[in-house]
Amino acid sequence: AVDASHDLSRLVASVTAFESERATVAELRELEEYRSRLVSTIAHEIGNPLAAITAHLEILDEVEIDPEVAVSLDSIRRNTSRITKVSDDLLLLVRVGNPGHPLSTRTVDLRRCVSEAADLVGIAASRKHQRLDLCLPQDPAATCGDADELDRMVANLVSNAVKYTPDGGTVRVSVTVHDTHVELAVSDSGIGMSGEDQAQLFEPFFRSTAPGAAAQPGTGLGLAIVQRIVQRHGGEIQVTSALGEGSTFVVTLPLAT
Ligand code: ADP
Image 1 (tube, rainbow, N blue to C red):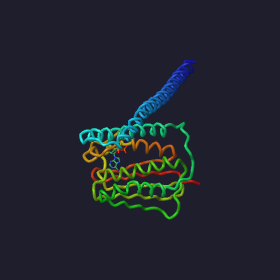
Image 2: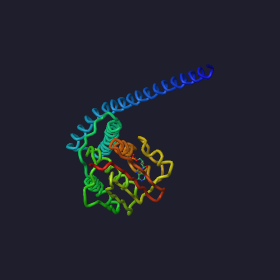
Image 3: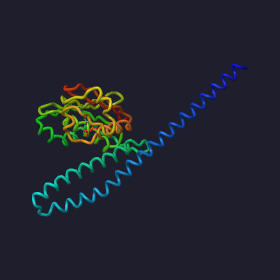
Image 4: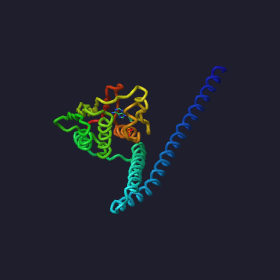
């Protein structure tokens, strides 16, 4: 009887612990939802006045302005576009990080995403005298999902590769079709990252303080967005990198059937 009551009290204790753990998970989920709502409300609140400022700046484009004021206006323009980018990226981050947000499911050919990303960064790469090598299969590399999100994911990885690679370097983008998945690999011969930086890479607002990285403009939201897009498409993202030697990002996504 003593054993049975001991077992029972242990069982009660573990059920209570389980219940309180469940409460913690529910609380965490609620907190996460609150945080997402807060971030998107702030981003919207910032977005409306920003749109008004941008519209007024466009009107001033038409007006002749004395050189001293032009310098100030230029700074206002640059900073306005920076805040606009942060606010747009925050809204996208909340959207793609929300499991309840519907995902459209069209067939998307990753070869097209890569060609469009290469077009976008082509000028920046050639200004830096970089080689941009594309290695695409003859047949479609089809996955299922939201074309805009997948375009954004590929463009972010390719533009980071160009951005964090010094002049004269090489960026290589390849797409490979396997039995059950498609693989995208973006490699660069750039500045690379320490192990410590790699561990924080996908956290919102993370920016490396390594020499060469901090000098580049950015919001630190790009890779957080990339990771969430990959995850909500049922895929995985991995990075291998060494300081001063370059980085490779590999994304695997389910093959469209
Ligand atoms: P951003 O480029 O806007 O700062 P990201 O989220 O795209 O933000 O990247 C976060 C950080 O990860 C960058 O600031 C940079 O330090 C590092 N990083 C990203 N891609 C690379 C890369 N290909 N090579 C080296 N560092 C990179």
